[in-house]
Length: 553
Figure (cartoon, rainbow, N blue to C red):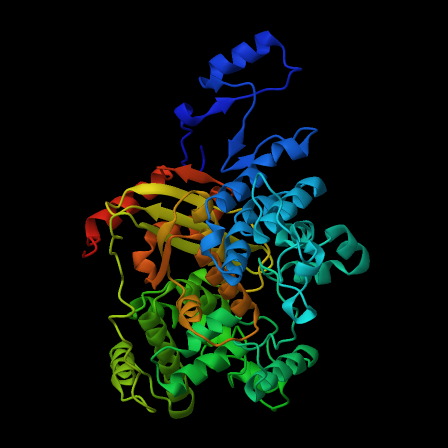
């Protein structure tokens, strides 16, 4: 297969419609070499075929709840203890099924009745005395209830069924519908609230308000510089380099198309000739001076960067390519080299001094070694941010997770589960889902991985994420009301459904397998592997096993 995946014939089965002829069925079975079954029962705990009787198909949900209730000894629990068990265990174990299917109303009513009977002291043989009707108990505590879930309403309000997409498309414009679907809905019921979406904690700040006004103002204002510029992530990378401020400022002017070359001065009304003083066949533009001028192209190739600038049509194209592929120290040299070239041009134009290659290299080296202004750099706690390759303790499953986000396309999540020996127990990749940002995609990926781990039966887990912001949000106690806070709150509530959960931050180099699956998400959409991974990931798994240290006991 193009993705490198191999079909496990021992775990594969064939099922066909009754309309398929026996001869065709036998030929297909022989061709594929897999077992034939009359019908598939379940996959990942979910029914694969929904017949006419949905109540019968989904009756296993009711059995799960009853098995959980039957195992508790309510006579040893206070009423408040029973309330907690019902809310955070009995009413949560069927979330995964309800997030994929709308259960029959009759089944929801039977589960409600079963839980209500347990709360009032009843069991399978006798009915307890119900002092308050269930609909009242399902009201919020502020409204006189106990905050239990009404299963029918909860099922209809889950994220997969929360948005009425046909109605949204009828009422709103397509672009508005897209943004609505990106809103990360919570898994658990809660009160709606207002929050400021432009800060991490959902609270308004003067700084965030100013930034928003700047964005709105610049969106409406015409730009006098070139229309094409860098995307925000590249700008962030551009400004964080260690180059001198003057070098970065000049490189910024080059990108914005405001370098005072002859053509730009002529366009702005300065009475001057716009022809290149050294190459009279072309006007002197920024691209001409720094990229297309025949004498400058060998200088780029002989520089520490060794760049063939003749392959680029403009300086902006060269900058974008460099920022997208090069390391930070190379970007520092790049910005400094552009500054040195501009200095050499000015020396030639205004002082008639020709700067030789040796002098250029010395100038770049001097600028790179010059003292930097401002405060001393912050030294990070390397122990906390170390590339962790530790294995979990025996009996604990390590779950490495990652997310891939592309603006306008949404996000995909993936996870890899390993035991204390480094052996792969399971791996999974999600289908694309709407997401508002890369950060929220990482948080939603954590929530998705917890749900998947629980459904696959891993109840004692150590989760590892390479997103430091999500890790800090998990450990924080901001009590905010932002989208991130609500997703992390869901994750904390999911903890009660495990035997034990911990979360650690790991650098990307220590999260290689999950990172690979995230970067190649389009090849693995909606796939679950049990005790195996794609062939191309095996070297990463082997490397992880060889370089990881067993956990100390």
